[in-house]
Length: 254
Image 1 (cartoon, rainbow, N blue to C red):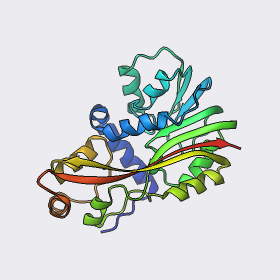
Image 2 (cartoon, rainbow, N blue to C red; image 1 turned 180 degrees about the vertical axis):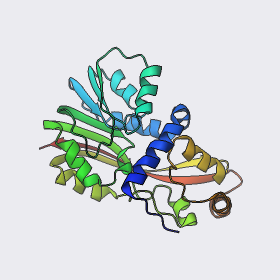
Image 3 (cartoon, rainbow, N blue to C red; image 1 turned 60 degrees about the vertical axis):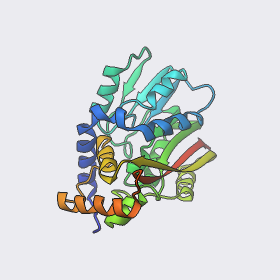
Image 4 (cartoon, rainbow, N blue to C red; image 1 turned 135 degrees about the vertical axis):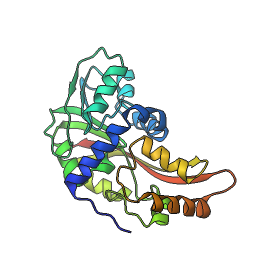
């Protein structure tokens, strides 16, 4: 079963899914929190005066920026309610500018550092998106981000014969997107991570609680079959695992 969603419908469903799970996102986004910690290590030792964060969500990575001494923040997210949740639950004493909307086509203010944690896999056209984001960087400015690679949830997609909502690009392809955007690679890292759950249904529920399964790709009957087959193929007495391929990049504008 192959699924292709038109761009407008894809964006609308992303907004719908993440909006529904704003209050549960932080509790269940353990992998994203771990990625944020690793991404923080790629940031410049001293942050510039103003930092742009793309897809800030409920503030998982934003809190790292605050802890590292950010003095001005420009926060973007596709889902305005995500930013509202962050500002309502986090004490912030520095100026914040909110720029809601799809980062693929927003003209952002000029900055010397742009960041994004576990966001770019949602882009419809990542090459053009990076060109757009790169245009907001001053010469010598840095883009630091994390993103998922094509092995992510490979077991789930294999069992269900499902495509990812967006194509997942490999390590070298992201490096090519950076070069096309006029950015010189400073540092890159890759990692395979496995997360464990009591069973496949628990795994699917976790994905839904962070809005990461936004497309209604299967009906309830198909979902029961999929989770049953997943347990049979990948389960043990201890539970099941899912694979995640994680990429981390830091690049400088030439």
